[in-house]
Length: 136
Image (cartoon, rainbow, N blue to C red):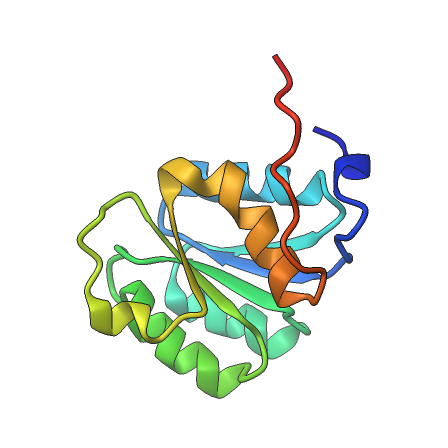
């Protein structure tokens, strides 16, 4: 995939919060390849520290995490960064409806690559964008 596949994307600062380091590295590499600055945090507390230090344009948070789950992180993040859209991720399909009410979008982790960029573009006013071409 190349950035030219998504001319509508605007560079911005994204905060990814997930307790799985491998997922964070994957998100970072993927999003940075499209020109985003990506901050990563392995917990809600670390995410709040980063969001208070840097101008965050959007937050991507896992639902199932120790200490604070994604719903709790979303509620607190709304207070800290009320204008930043929040996307919740989960590998599980049984995320409570109450948690989903706290976020702007939900993406199953197995659909992350195909749905995350369109969600971010929509939040930044670029409108829906098609999925990138498949590189075999």
